[in-house]
Length: 480
Image (cartoon, rainbow, N blue to C red; front, side):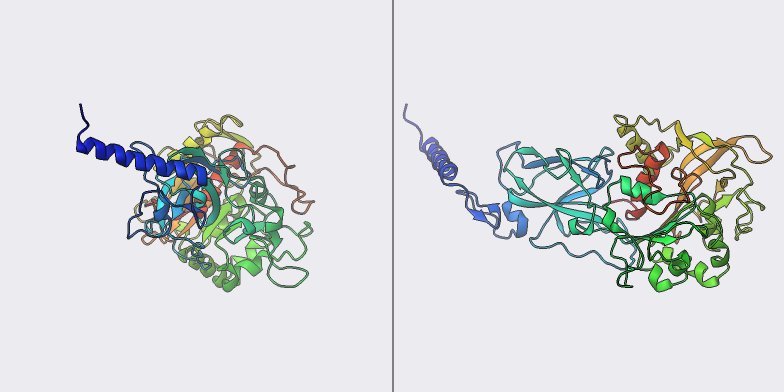
């Protein structure tokens, strides 16, 4: 039986394509700025940028990348991070250096060709990618952003080959690797979130004093340490007192995130009597700043009239009084336990995400979200009575709770870690308070000598604070 003309045409077409592909295998694909040109195929006339390098694959096949986004240390998973390929060639547009209301409702669709989001274990699958020798893969969590140029083979699934473990794409450890937010840490007498940041893998060169002692200019690091310590505690050369951070509005607004570690009242007692400091803290949040406060430093939230209604502390006044209560009166009212078992509150998608993330760490640090051991609490640590009574006007997320007694009442469920967005009706900034903090630090040593040795395992509560560190710096609202 003679073949029909239609069958002959199909066979001839297949023969031409086979010959073309054999020619490619022998001679190599033609390179165009690190990409590929496709034999016997013409890209869409209206394509631009990396869209022109997306191959036409056989039915069911796709150019796919699998991987895992981690903290700079290469192993701590980063959940809900964005992974995408930009539409256009060339450098990414710069992130704004000034404080902004970074709402997640501003999607990447206008500048991403393909985009996905990591799971709780940091893993992702990115499909329908362009192919070539140097395809940019962007990983981003809040203001942390890094670009990897990876070779991607057309119509195949492959593992990411970053500088971390196989398949891991770490966020930048230093500015030479990508974008880092500018952060200020008020080193305190007891808490040391800066040590957790070291364990997350941020380079030693990024931890500096706010002023460079050699040039008297700004410190070069992304993480500036200020002094909120008791007199006589060693400090870094050039380490400025916290008053320079909170009294100077222009300086404060240079930072995207500030950490007010648990400490005594050496500095806070005088600072929080200054109307300008109270106004600066309020306006910093309203402009998009992020504020992290632990334990005895709670007054940096409680003494600001616009912020005091969000959290009611166990102190000398009833929760019906939503104006600032007495200064430092929540210290010593309760919190006599030195350790306890806490549970993640599974009452919102954000808190469920924390619980799910903690479970992913089980290979190295078995953590049960319903029974997290919290230890090294200070004598007289600050106890929270409740989140805002008027949750409609002052919405609050409670992350962890535990059965805690105060001076006169038996144990009852109390919040341990809370966060709220501000202003409540037009959210822009975010504040977080935690009754517990990192392990107790030595007041006889200067940073980083008081941190645990390199490679030391984080305490369960430090894992929670590591998660909340990235949560604090993320955009406000849902992504997309």
